[in-house]
Length: 498
Image (cartoon, rainbow, N blue to C red; front, side, top):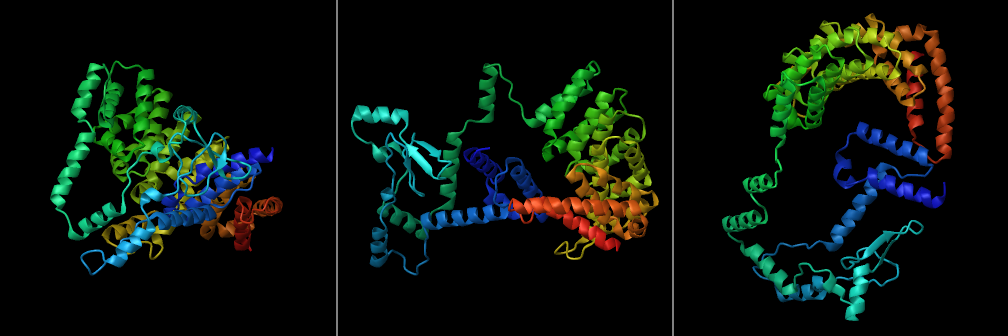
């Protein structure tokens, strides 16, 4: 792959991964940043191009943003006097009007554009992949207009609001003197109302054009009615469920589905004799339950957990069981009361039977992920200082998580020997999940692990394999690469087994 093509891939990947990075990266957790960095490493491995670390990009973007703000912001300094004195006025005059900002005047040839320069509207701007600099030239309509007029239009091509020094002084005086907030609010509301048309007026116009305008709630109600229609075919019901699944990704829409009684209809569809409806219903439930406590409680009270376990415990196509696992994982996440009932209903035994009978590694990984999440949740909530001010709800969560006795059941039902089977998979991600779960189960499985010669041999072979992969990463210049993290997990497991 040529250097220009690599440069293009690098710029594209960096742009996608760092869109608005100054807004969201600072609030990311450590696990989220690590997961995103894996994406960067994978892209780097595929393209063979060196990509900067996300932290470096975030730092540079923040510094660049700060420089732009500091160079263009208007700072108002509090003064004890009621008006600007001569020295302040003289200082503002020296700074010059905003109209004096530098405007770049392009020609019909590509020219380098310096940072901070403005360009007339309609100009062509491009990024030179060889030099990394932006270049600009006149647009076709600009060239034609200039040829007709015989002169440059300059600033006239970029109409916009501008303020003189006197206008800025008056604005500052108004700020100090104060204005009537009620009057200004009314004027702003009236101006805003004049910019937009009322919804009823839009609906009337749409009706004249024979177009139907519906809110998400109206669409949801229509789809639920369509799904509940006794004359609807299986294909029509599946289509309705497919559209509902798209809508319930939004928290409010999922709660509306529960309040309208549609959630119960979807749960009842798990008992359908058609496997396709079972699969679609489980998919809708998984999406509606994700990070939605209100819907989780509603679904649990509707007997969803028992019906999902029935799907998993009885002979069903693997596609149905995959969607049922998705729904179970969404229902149990951050819901200790449901986790406790899951264990009482024999859910762990059901997962073990699927794990032993499954020929596909993807299903096994999903099961191991569910187990790891349950272990990790309890450990995190039990850590001191997790909540700055522990309240009654925090104490109740601690009490409910204390009733989830997962680790002893894992050792009792043979999971200490089942999870290490994933280490033989060819996927690096699967091995990583297996290693993390092995470490999480170490307190109750350590004795058995030490007596497992096959596990020791497998860990030794994996250490040699990832040591070579780490060397490859270092040659490419990636000191803290993805394979290095897996090697660190391996070394931690081996250390705990000694």
